[in-house]
Image (tube, rainbow, N blue to C red; front, top):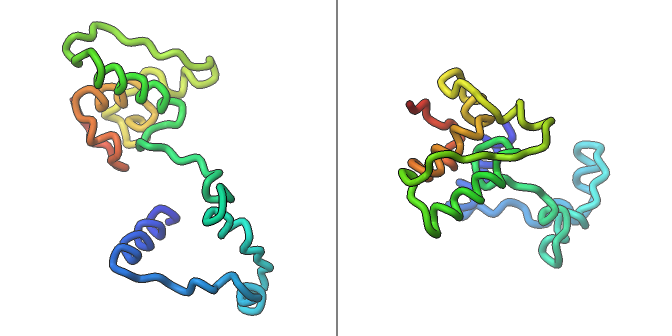
Length: 140
């Protein structure tokens, strides 16, 4: 639901919808919802990093534990290697994550595709645009 609401807000903003820019400037949240809202951390991003800048966002629809491997692999592909030249690739992660991102039947589900390091690296090599797809396709 949060992703859906965020997408709806982004689409509305792209069409020029701005909303009430003074919403957190007074006690409206307290009067209408009984929530005391300190807008300072929300608008601090306009002045410095603030709460928005502290968010950790993933550049791909993949398990966070696979992101460094995907980036490193894409850097190799962009610099000197072609996918067909690669015979093997090893991804090292802490043992607690190895089982999570290790061998998966990517055909089993969307979650299996998102958490499979092998599947994500195959996308990086052969279908890099699909890395951003929130519903990665079932590929063979």
